[in-house]
Image (cartoon, each protein chain N blue to C red):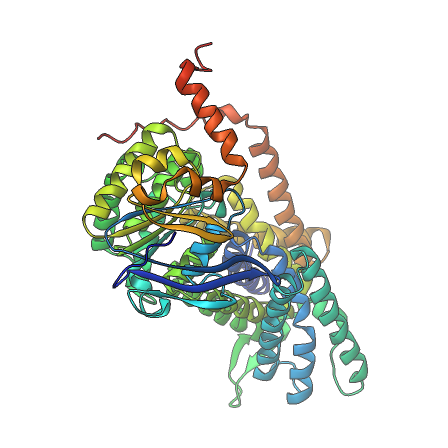
Length: 298
Length: 262
């Protein structure tokens, strides 16, 4: 088999996106906020449209800023509805993201005549077109696919973010009240995480689409969590799953001549089901009861 | 009956706290001395947890103020330590016992810094104090209720604070562990720390605390144990429920009734 550079680029990009989403997804899952990721990925739509409208380009910084602001707005709306209006969390997520998404669709329709953007491209994306969308500098130098660069930059930001704020993310996920008493701002850390999720959603929506970003945020961490109870191995396993999903997803899609992103998520779902079946079969006595501690010696 | 203190560690002035316009604490006003083991007693729904959450600023008061070491809470966070109710967190969280105890050191570490060897040594010392050194690398999901509680207390110790606020640290803990933890708290109090404990068992409260706060939406009493642990004040705090409690105790002491033996 010869080296297929297009296949390599698609798998590399898929992997980069899946790892970024997976890392953020681990913390979303630990905060019991996986569905908030779903909400954000849809709620950023009006932000994208406004950013697009302001800049006139799909690839501008304005789009990312617009999406980031909408992501934060969605997070605040969900929290606000839950705390102030006493709406259940699932209901407030449902209200928030459908409302913002609908506004996004209305905006697209209103500006459709001047904007080359439609719901399809936001929702589904197409990673297979990636090798023909090249980043060519003004001097004519071909640097390779633009989306691969975007995905790499995204993973770098996500990595630095998690590295720097690791202890704050862990503490606020585990025990929010305790962190507030210490003076570590749980709300600020939460908003920072949500901004990263918004940014990741936007930078991946062109290739895998908003719906599939949600799957990458939720499924690999949930699968990994069935296998390990330590945070470091949870992150490593999520990254390993991201690589496996991209490689298998690509070749299965190639073989069946189908959507690559769709196949990646199907593979992820398959891994989850298999893990759940294997782990579910294990009887509860398999692990044994925890050893009883001795009372304190005094 | 409220005994006020000169130069208090904690001063609460006319505190009223409400959820959705319904006050759950009315005009609570007391001050506490340093170096004492202090119990907060009251029936379910008396606002005990609400009171310590309001002290730490987790719930904003409707009126009144709280001063700790004569300063507002935000200036003295590094000197306050908190043991939340065990059920307030998800124990399936992927962390080891050491990870959780190290969280106690995060406040003093500051942003972006990771705990190093010094913090780990401190965490080990704190685990030793609660008798959990054998469980350092155990995942917290594999602990029993009493062990979880001891991990939480070790985490609070790692904060190296001067004022400790503990919310029901003896819920679901066996007698031996309860006595051991009380001994630990007593040692902390004699070394000058102030330990405030939400507690619901009147009988062990009789033995252990130096100072007792009785609460039932209003403040019923706050003072040295010998002065406030009277039948009249207990009746005021617990209302009709106290009758049942004393009846059971009488029964046990008279007949040496032991449900385990019969």
